[in-house]
Image (cartoon, rainbow, N blue to C red):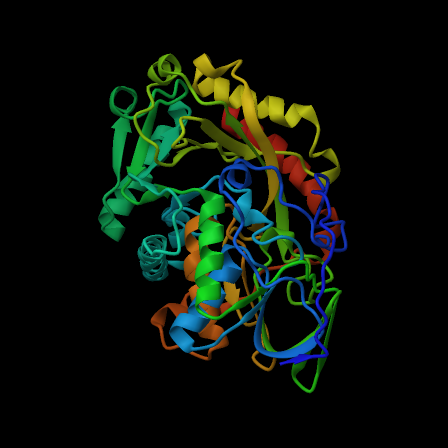
Length: 468
């Protein structure tokens, strides 16, 4: 119920290319989208409910209108009959959800199945595999709905070995997937990959996984908006949370247009989480910049030279990995790591590095003109795995984040799981898995030095990926 509702209109703020979630107080107020391919080709953004106008009460507030926040709102309405209020600081799906590579893979976080076993044992690893398998089924179901037209391109995921030395590990991982998890991956030789799939000149072989789908990231986000609003959720843009107090168990979320009083709050801000938003998420992520480019449409001769016969997700085996794909309009998209800080994000050397990466794979594209270039923050957790969690059972605060660059698919399931937590439904056996039973870890006393560590880590990763 709105008290003294006054229509609000906030002027659109320009996109800030130097925004940095570690040093900036917040993501801004009604900022425009980053100039991504997805925003440039998604069409007119869907209607939302405008800025908060006055004070009002809500049963559940979701902070963040990206994939996770929207999925949470969708599943709260569809599965639990709860119409949530979504608060977005800027324009809808402003952060990760319109800056990613549009690749849906059967993964969550950055760890491989073998690393799950090392960390938790076989039984828990099998439970995690069942969770991501169910997640992919949910994702496929969502993108098949009438609300969503996101140009899906299924066909599996190609994990491409960029050096001879990584092939033994790739073969071992494939055998583990098949024998321990009953999952039908297979190894391809360089010759088979080049002949029938893609002529990546770095490739010495590949592992193919059956589940992998490319989507249009902007159209997916806009489709989620339409679905959430159809189900009764309210999505208030230009409404950053600038203050948060809790009185008698009720959360008072202050925005420029008024205060929203919420019984429960679900945080879905990922790599754009302000350090001052809430103590439960403060410094619990290491935001990492990822850079992307999209070329002009390739000619028939270039397509033939590159031998691209698939539009499915392609990822190489670098620690500082490249993710790349052929778009439906025959443009090539590729992304990888970028600057350490927002202040350095516009430095031309990062784009030059990405262009060199593209040229190593496809020499015919070395001097190709670009139509789009952008960067965005990835929500990497300190132990490389996400969390969907209620930090304090006595407080109605929840969060879902930490996907480490693998959130396009799993964010749908994470939103569903967070909706279950908010609704008090923990009957699913999946809630015994570690990503639901522990908080995002903190670096503690090392927190101020994280970027120093990141700088040294990048040097080591480069040496390991390219030289040693």
